[in-house]
Image (cartoon, rainbow, N blue to C red; front, side, top):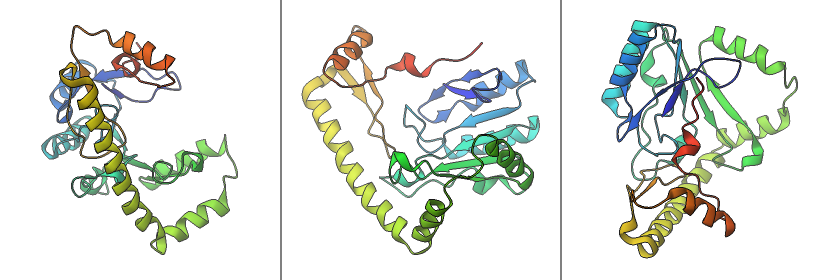
Length: 236
């Protein structure tokens, strides 16, 4: 499920189902009719985590129309845009939203480089950016300006782009290796779709198998596996 609004600050979170085409927009529409207090929708349209599905083009347009009708703020988390492996990256919602649409597009450089980098970027209307900057300054007034400038230079001179192409090749090899081993070792006990990109694989196990037991056994062997319940914590 994907949550509406944020998890912090006492804001209520409402879950919306995700299927093979991404966020269920029809369910979202019904949810909005039942609860007009909802003010924002959070989506991961490129490779939804953890299912890895891509938000379909038709549903993207419907979501933008719903946002217009209900005056919703769309928060588009495009955290792994660079890891589209089997085709060209899908254009973000921000590319179709128009300058007058309330939308926050956020991305990360940590996934492309190293987790410790802790750098990302935001695209939004000036008034939203100003408010975000004010809130950010409350917890981090200085930031890391030399690091930010170095990353900007790497982006301008093409280093970051070359690294992205190399990283995609490496992660395709890792993905394919992992899935070969899953097929070899687990056989028909599991099913999965080969993700078109991203950094995860969503595996479904037979109903007769206890996923919690697998998780516990894996942990004893120093392997961390998250099951479905880890991603369904929705505040009431």
